[in-house]
Amino acid sequence: MGAPTKNNPVVLDIGTSVCAEGKVRVNYNKKIPAPEGWLLDSEGRPTTDPGVLYHDPKGTILPLGGQQSYKGFGLGLLMDMFAGGLSGAQCSTPGVESKSANAVFFLVIDPAKFAGVDHFLNETTNLAANVLACPKADGATGDIILPGQLEVAEKIKRTKSGLNLDEGTWSQLKELAQKYKVPLPDSVAN
Image (tube, rainbow, N blue to C red; front, side, top):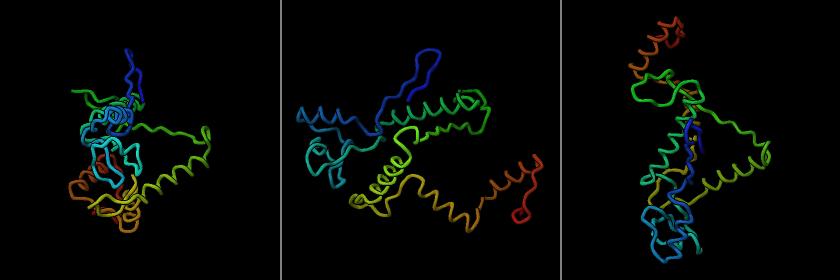
């Protein structure tokens, strides 16, 4: 992912894992352990054995996070550039008041222009099902969930039972409604 500037472009070239597989391969070839926090064995236990990627039963590389916070910073920086630079708001700037409370960037991709809608939906559906069917790590409790799954459940719950706001937030909303002459519905005015 990258964004141009008037000077050099800002280019983030990362994988979404703790490290590149090639780095694990180098350790494997040198017959030295991988750093702690890089790998899980086939049972989901932390390991420093790079061989878990190359011998059955295979393990995996962990996703980014922790000591790889520079990757999260890079993603956040590029998202700030896209949201501020493309929305008409502005990027994060010390000492400058924001023009907008919530600059937003959306990227919309038409799968029909690539491998096709059916292929895309088959692949995404299968991957989601595979993630949900994964065995849990020792000591893990609760269900395996996908991003957005909790929000869907919350939407269903709130659609049925409504939304409760704390008094501070409700007071702020009432003040804004009054300021901009937006009537509050009778059922929620108190």
